[in-house]
Image 1 (tube, each protein chain N blue to C red):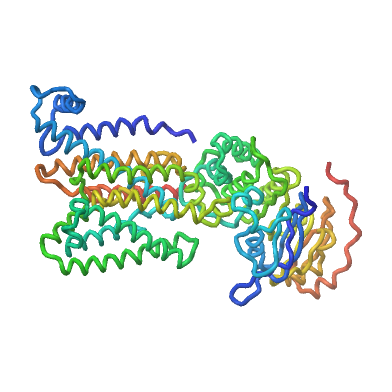
Image 2 (image 1 turned 135 degrees about the vertical axis):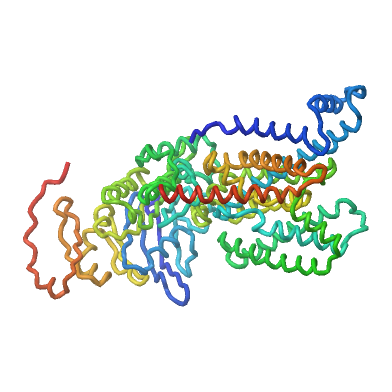
Length: 287
Length: 343
C-alpha cells in the first residue's frame, strides 16, 4: 500500500479572473479521514471538483495512488474514487435498489455481480426496508442516504474483480439534509463500511461533526489554507474565529475529549471577559 | 423490483392488434381467407378456394403494412424513451433533436421544387430525402449544442428548438412557392401515414430501424447512468461524450428511417415512455423493450382506425395518434403530478 493515497501540490484554480483555489498542498494517507471546512464561497466545492477530476486545475497537480488524475481512464478512476455530490436530481421513478446499482453502471459487470454488490451495500446502509420503493417519493434524507449507498457501491469490492488498493471517497456536505441521528450514522458508516485503507475527504459544515469523525482538518478561507492539521491541535478558538469571523468558544467534549465548538451570539469582548473554564471533570471513556 | 410480468398481456395485445389489422380494411378478409392466404404464401395451391386478389391484398397490402406499423411504432417508442432519459426531460420526444423538422424540410423541397425528380432514384427519392434531412438536422443540432456548451442536455434542447424554428421558417418559404398539388401532398405527408408500405421499402427501412433500436437496448445501463445527469455519469466512470453520441446516432437513424417511410407520426415517442414507466418503473433495461412493444401495439391500433373509420378512404394515422395521444398525455401528466404532490 502506498504511503500517501492522495497528494495535492500547489493546486490553483482561476475562474473569471478570481483565484477560487489558491495554492493548496496537502495529502491524505490510506485510511485517513480529512474534513474540509470553511465559510460559504471559500472554495470547498471547487476543491472537491478538482480532486474528483471534474475540473482541471489552472496549475498544480492532484495525484491519486501516485499517478496524476489525468493518467487514469474515466473507468479506472471511477473504480478508485467516488463522489457524493450535494444535490442530485433524478427525474424518473427509479427504485432505491436501481439507484444504488448505478454505482456500478460503468463497469460492464454481469447483472448478477451488480445485484450481489447492491444487496450488500443496501444491507450495510440499512436501506433494506426501502430497497423497492420509488426513489423520487422518498424524503430528502432518505434520498441522501440512497446516494451515499450508490457511491459506496462504486468502491465496494466485487466478487471476481480485483479491488484497487488506492480508494478515495469524496463527500460534499454528506449530512446537509439528514436529521441528528442520521448525520452521525452516515459519517460513521462512510468511514467503516468500505473497510481498511479507503481514504475519506469530506466537506463538512458542522464543525462538531468534523471533530467527531475525522482525523485531520483543513480550514479554507478565500481559496487558501488558513490552518491544517490534526483535529485536536488545529480546531482552536483563534483559528475558528479567524476563518468564520464569528465569536465562538472551544471546550473539550465531555465524553470524547475532542474540541467542541460553541458558536456565540455575543461580541468578542464579552467572550474575552469570560473566566477560563474550570478544569474538565474526568469522564470514563465509553466502552 | 419484481413487477407483474408485463409481457404476459403485452404479447396477446400485440397478437390481437395484428389480427384486427389483418381482418379489417377497405376490403374485408375473413378468417378463412387469412388462413388460405397464409397457406398460399407457403406454396400451397389454394386457387380453388381463394380468389387471387385476396392473396394479393393479404401479402402485398396487409402484411407489409402491419410490419411497417409495428417497426415504426416500436422505433418511435424506444427512441422517445432513450431521449427522455438522455435529456432528463419527461417531455422530450424525437422531434426535439431536429429529426422531424429536417425530414420535413427536405421533403417539402423535393415536393415543391422537384429537386432530384427524374433522377434514377425514382421511388426512393422522397424517403431518401426525408432520411438524409433528418440525419443532417440532427447533426446540426448536436454540433450546435456541443459548441454552445459541451456537457448539458439543456443546450441540446435549446439548439433543437432554435434549429426547428429555422427549419419551420424555411418550410414556410417553400410552402409559399408551392402549388396546390404539392402543398396537399406535403400536408398529408406531415400528418403521417403507413400507406407507403411495400416489401421494397420495408427491406430498406426496417433494418435501419431495428439495428439502431438494438443498439439502444445495449446502451440501457448507460442511459440509466445518464439519467443522474452528465456530471454524475462522468463521476461514475462513464465516457459521457461517447455514450451521448451513440444514443443520438441510434435515435436519429431509427427515427429518420421511420419518418422517411411514414411521415411525421407524433405523440408515440412522447406518450409511450410515460405509459411504460407506469407499468415497469424507470430502469431502461425493461423500459426499452416494453416501449417497443407498447409503441407497436399503439400504432397498430391507430392504423386499424385510420384504415376503417372512413373506408374506403383513409385517415392520416399521425392525425389519429395526435387525437388519441394528446388527451392520454394530459391525463398521464396530471395523474403523475397529482400523485407526486400528494405523496
